[in-house]
Image (cartoon, rainbow, N blue to C red; front, top):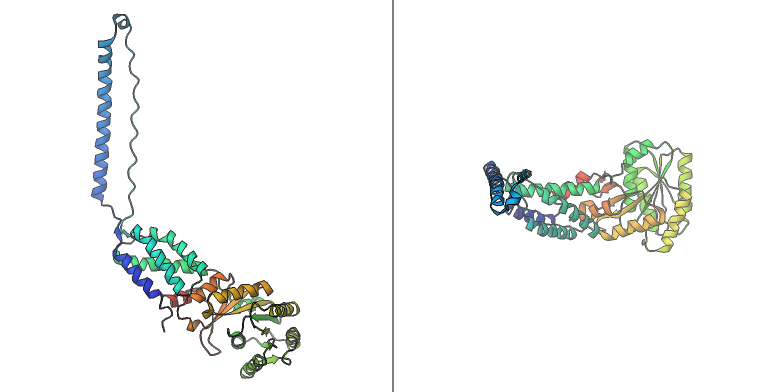
Length: 374
């Protein structure tokens, strides 16, 4: 399955630019010719100066009066030789993108990024980075220009994603405190509850025990869904009646984990809308009571700019430490996941790439780039 159809157009346009690349090479014969011409010009100038020095005393003798001739004429001061002009710099040989086409290519790049659901601020940042890179491209043959441009674009995207991964598994191993509490936030429909179940499954595979807290007491269906996952995974789920205090559920789950010496408490939360003030107040209360060691935002990669705004609102309310991007396998254009990973300003822990419990993979920038250019 191809990840990004929209980038095909950019590849074709890059190929066109390669065909129009201009020759940036300078032959050694041309350089030698330039040196000979420069040396000849310098010799001619020196000859003119010498002739001027010989003619000047004779002209003074003809026009001077007898009285003035009694004193010998002062010798002219020697003229300093002109400094030779610097030799022209030798340009690096090969081919480069026609400067007149750079702006067109940058416009095409930005348009394709926006069509691929890349957030405008991220697309603009990539465009600016490529504006610095494109004029520096030099290759040995015209046919290599498209590959060089794509390589620079890949490098630019990678630079945006550097430091954007959060290694959840390593974090768990380095923390001595037990149990560790992780709170998951995000709007309904992003796959938050399923993500919690997947994390519990992954932790179980790694030998860690978990307790699930059904903190989305606003929806009875959410409580039931988490209980079903717990039954399938063999993981304890702590829940109260629908409509009960979500903070109390989190408190009881932590208490249970402490008494049973569990490693993790994974807290589900309500996710009506990030603009719902009551929801944000509820999350703030859970945050105070549970005092989570880590707060993870779960975002739908298909939501694009909406997911970015959601993450920012949840970050304001409770402070987000990392993100999980779901439905990456159905992100046909690839840009949304790239935007969230960069624009949210939070590292990404996992990517959801399917429907099963095993379809949760650690975030890898190179993996995402490969899908974009697949």
